[in-house]
Image 1 (cartoon, rainbow, N blue to C red):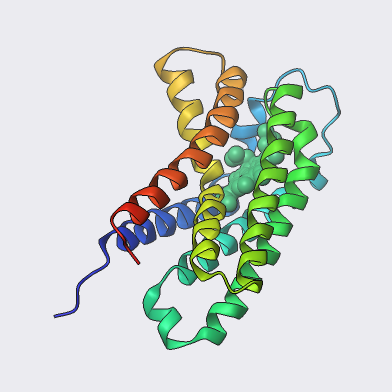
Image 2 (image 1 turned 60 degrees about the vertical axis):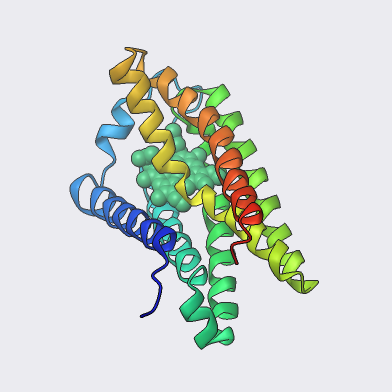
Length: 211
Ligand code: HEM
């Protein structure tokens, strides 16, 4: 009987549930992002709602594509079936990351929590872009194992939104911080976690010689 890849199954479940949640929540339940926008206070720039909303729709769409494309490319079964699919899907991931980063660049100055949050998002943008481009450079140099590790580091950033909201929820509802402060804490703790978690997974895989 074929051995099941449990870690991949868990990753697939989390990713699929989050993609569905992001699509339903942002396009069906709250398409005007009213709940999220109501928590913005003291913006230094006037937010142009129709433009912001359209940029947010594009952002969410490409974020979901990146999440799905990345997930498919970690599948060993698909990789063994078709290298061509892996390559094309890899470029879809890359383009989606670029689109998320560009739209994020537009939204960052209006971020909940003000300037400190904006700076956090800009840092996220640069780190994610650098890591993703490094993953591409590694495979261009035919370093498969390093490419895989850098892609794991890159894919972690697809969970940015989920982690920010989880941390913000915990700080706001658990510790009673103001929502904007909780959101800012969410951004910076997510940056730390998104860098540390894949690093731990990569070390474990290396130590246990998991291919
Ligand atoms: C890949 C998964 C991601 C999804 C599904 C996603 C989704 C969203 C959604 C729904 C919003 C609207 C507000 C909210 O509900 O939080 C948003 C806002 C935003 N996202 Fe993303 N996002 C993702 C990744 C990223 C990444 C990696 C970055 C930065 C590199 C980023 C930067 C931003 C910024 C700057 C905002 C505006 C925040 C604000 O107005 O306070 N997102 N995102």
